[in-house]
Image (tube, one colour):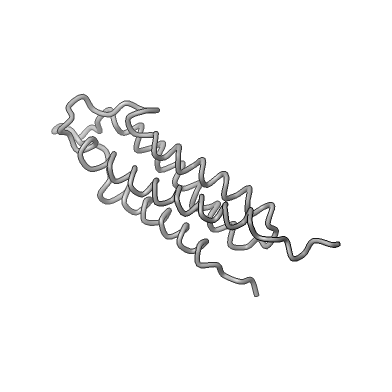
Length: 137
């Protein structure tokens, strides 16, 4: 049986919290007529990137090879940076600074993205410092 690492589980949990938050609290602005605001494209992009990060986090649990795990950690770090930049940089948000996307969605996504980036960075540093026990001498 594979050894379950606490760091892997924590990264998957942060991705899951981000995804659940995106569908519950961190949603795009809704107008009075029921249409979504300009920020909906930022929300959609963040859902896609967070979903990819969650799948990568789950995959990382099943690999023992240090090089593959390092690659997955680098990709997850990049995904966290993309999630951080998605609302407001890659995609425009609604015009008024007091709207829901500026006051709730953007800060929530950024906080969880920083958590995921930090965990991925710590995992990456740990993987790079660890000696490969399976390497032939």
